[in-house]
Image 1 (cartoon, rainbow, N blue to C red):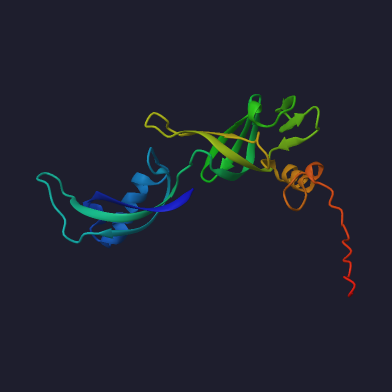
Image 2 (cartoon, helix red, strand yellow):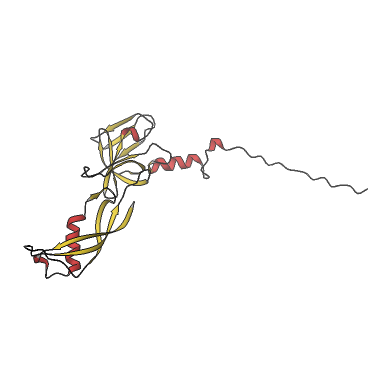
Amino acid sequence: MFSISTLEDVVRIPPSMFGTSLKKAGISILKEKYESMINAELGYIIMILEAKVDEMGKMIAGDGGTYHRVEFEALTFTPKLQEIVLGEIVDITDFGAFVRIGPTDALLHLSQVMDDYLQSDVKSGMIIAKQSNRTLKVGSTIRSRITAVSLGKAATMGKIGITCRQPFLGAEEWIAEEIKKSGKDGSSTSDKKEVKEVKVEKKEKKEK
């Protein structure tokens, strides 16, 4: 899920940036520090959007820079368990596929693609289902559910697991087929009960 987070920090403005406006210098330093960082609570910090730097700074003996408190806004992406996401397959491996969701890649393991016998063809960049003949390939857009998220300090890139083994998940054409089979009202055509029209004749009472 994408969101805008408001954060606070203290930035050091080096003497080389004294001729630059505080806001411009602050944003430049924040970008270098935060962009592409992974935080256990915020998730992926994508971009610094805005910053408000205190004009009054502090100096430390022996340090030529000035230290300023700063409040800033950052665009973040926080993957949530059970969240439904759209993504594009960017790589096929022997054990599954990597799907680009937001700023990162999630792992779609072969066991989580569908209930079928699957074959991963790395050379052609495809996953092939033997029974249904359905395929996934690099460039395919899929709808999936997040089943695992690891954004701890030890995870330099973060780890996200996804699944397509649920109704109305998977490649766009699979979902279209399921919707068509289920009928317009969402119920299975096999479960629909036949409704017969019954005509009820009203008998007029004869006046005596």
